[in-house]
Every structure is written in structure tokens, then in C-alpha cells.
Image (cartoon, rainbow, N blue to C red):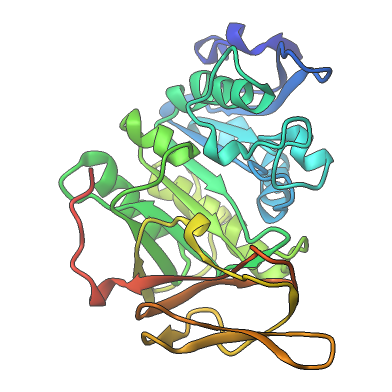
Length: 340
């Protein structure tokens, strides 16, 4: 069914139903705004879980996971409501792009959006007001995309004096991924910063990326979604979906999650890393080297602080200004902040 996004009413969905909606919105550009939404509403009351994929259009692990959830979940399986969005940024997905091809904007930096702005700003506004505002919990699937490799991890809002922070942390622990990244603060413009402003708990995922789906990582995404739903009290028969014990958290990281502040190259060339994801590094350690056509060293990149490697350039061919490496802290090595 097709409907203008501003007219969509989640409260009008009947219990015990599944629905497909194409939410539309007007733009100043040539393309019409579209948000595909699949709704599963159980017979019993319960929380509303919003699951987003492809906020960045070239990150596919979440897309496959949402597709699998669409096929798997039936109204008789759950309490509450699952809102499933396979392509949060449909134009970016169709263009195999991190940014929206139409206006060059990064959807994950535009929330809460602007109903009268450029295409991506309007998209952010409708996602925020139509979906995020009505969720009890947000799960946002991401991965490294085309240019950056990231370890499999869960990011969450870390604020033990705040109900949303406590619920976010508990959900991160329950998801079943060994590396979790605590964010006392998050940068503006994200889905999760918008959720934080609304007092809605959230987690997001990261995985290796590279425009490919690693089967093991995607399986962890799928199982994690069921573990999260069970944690929220949504699954009527969790044993149908969840096999085995929840893996123990082994890596606890702390930072703001801002990959925009990564180490960048100052020249083009061929990058050979000297570190791997989740390696511990000390101040001055070599991250890697950029070489020229004859093997000459063009740039040796070194850390400016101690920490743990949480992101690396995914492609050896580097351009000037490309992100090379992101470093954050071990949770044990830093005093947790209280959040904002």
C-alpha cells in the first residue's frame, strides 16, 4: 500500500496483521521520496521495535537481515510491533552509495532533518517523525561499506544515570556480539542522536563491509535481532529462533563512535597496513605506509594517542584525504563519562 508519510498512523495497524507500506514524500528534486516499511503487529501488546538498514546505501548486511526477518516473523510470533525498513535511503541503495546521489548528503548526518530542505534532509525528517518518534527501541544496522573495514561490534548509548542509557547497555550485552562500544556522547545528525534526544534507547551494528556480505557476520546480525527481541519480551517462543548461549562480551570499547575524525592520508598511493582491527597501539606506533609506483615511501602514518584500532582503510588504493585508521579506547583504560 502507498501512502504519504505524514499521513501514516501506526496506531491504526490492527493487531495480528502484517502490512507492506510505501511511504512517500514530496521533494524539490526530480525523484519522489520513498520509504519501504514492513509492519508486523502481534496479537498481544508489547514494545515497538524499529529496525533500519541501508541508512548508507552500500552497507548490505542489514538489508539481508531485514529481508530474512520480513519472511520469518508472523504476527503470532511476537508481542508488540516490529517496524522493518530494508532501505532507509532507497536512492543511496539503488546508487550503491554511502551518500544520496541526488544531493550528495550523508543521511546519517542529517537527523532530525528538515521537512522543507534538500531530499536527504526531508528523508531524515520523515524517518524521524514517522518512525523513530513512535519506537520504544531502535536497532540501526551498519557496516564498513566500501571504503572502511570495521570489526563486528555493537555500539550503544552509555549513560548509567539515564533510563535510555541503561536500557541501551543491557540490549548491547544481550545482542550476542563479543565487541561492544560504549558512547557516552554521540555526534549530531545520526538516527541514534535523534533517538537519544527523544529518550529512546538504541543500539547499532558494525561489520567488516567491503560491499560484500560475510555469511558468519550476517548470521550474527540475524541471531542478534532475535536475541534483542527476546530481551525486549517480544518473542512468544524464543526457543524457535535462538540456538545456544549468548556469547560473552570480550572487548569493551569507549568513545564517541565518530569515524569522521579518523587519521587521513595526505597523498595518493598504495596503502599497506601495519596493524589489524582490534589491535592495541601506543602513541607513535606505525599504522601503515603509503607507497608510490616504484615502492618509494610517500607517507608513514603513526598514532597520536594510545588505543585500539576500530577502523582501517578497506581498499589499498588510497587518495589524498582518505580515511586510513580510526582509534578508540578500551573501556578498562578510560574513566567512563556520564553522558550529556
